[in-house]
Amino acid sequence: MPIPDPVAFNIFGIDIMWYAILICSGIILATLICCLRAPRHDLTSDQILNFVLICVPAGIIGARIYYVLFHWDWYAGDFFHMINIRGGGLAVHGGIIAGLGTALILCHIWKIRPLNLFDLAAPSLALAQAIGRWGNYFNSEAHGGPTDLPWAITVDGQPVHPTFLYESIWCFLLFLFLLWLDRRRGFEGQIILLYGILYSVERFFVEALRTDSLMIGPFKQAQVISLVIIAICLVAYIVLRRKGRKA
Image (tube, rainbow, N blue to C red; front, top):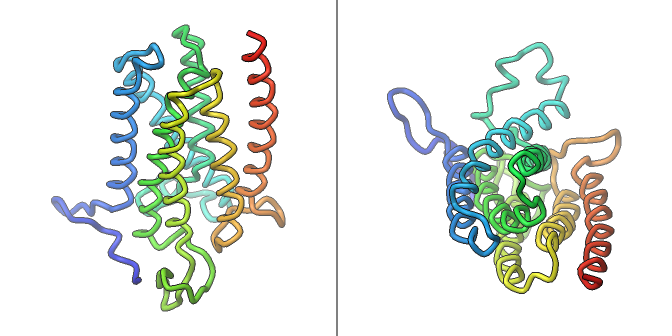
């Protein structure tokens, strides 16, 4: 399966990239689903839109900063190169950290229970990732090493693992699972913590196949971060579940 043209179409001499279309589509669909499900979490669609208007830009900025920091030798001294995201270069972990961190601050300001909000957002976050990962396909990035599997994609004449596809499928299944589980939620925080655990498990193993990973010394940073997130979420899950049972 060859790599397609990263440019979707051209308007007045400006190339509109598939990368941007897919990321924006994921954000819009995720927002709509959150708005529809908001009453189940004692929230309104207006409240959700308020969060989205602030947290989404913060998440994109965080994703870009995270990526640039781990490629500092490439970006140092060239500010316009740093802010040019049209060619790709957004780190999922940076976006999640910045987006959820911003939401946590807003919850404190607006007197909203953060775990309840995060439980609402978790399934939609997984769906947005499932859609957005296809942007990596059009940009010929985030792929794995050589393989002879029948579903390999061809990059620079070499069949390689479509790691973006592995993550996209996993995140879509995670979206469906978390939607189902949210109707049976045992305690606040259960959905977002399971998202953190299950997404991180997948990311740890898929990252092992990738050839363009960000590094922390000799280690792939996504694998290190995934292990840390799994550990933190597991401890939090056990603690909150026990508190829920006592209550």
